[in-house]
Length: 168
Image: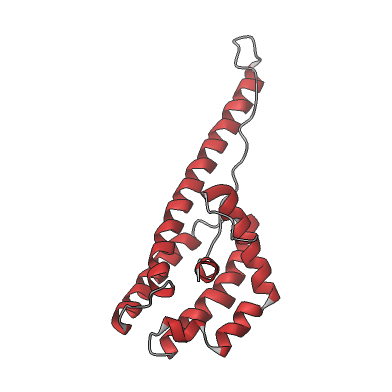
């Protein structure tokens, strides 16, 4: 189930630019010092963006975990409210996706997360029934979705402290 939950997480991460290594001595020329400062500012900005993204993703994971994680004890009304909350968090997260991983993120969201949420609604807000349906099985088996998921997971592992999946 932990693997399924991670697949249901719409993941995306900003890549962190490496800070420029440079001479900090007073005799460094002004052009180099200015370039280094610009690189360091950009890296700091990337680090801040990654932190914001990771925090937002953690919020979304917590909400989606209540929906699709065991023990499946929430009422239909609670599931509906949680998925509404997840939709708001998803929009906020979508705004943080870097261009370099936008394509796999959008594919994962459109072809995996949204259809599973729709199945949940169609099945009376029953996430257990939704993720165990033949329709969900087809989604889980799609090689394009799996490739996008793996790419997004790699970013999360590298940048947000997500643990690799068992056996990965």
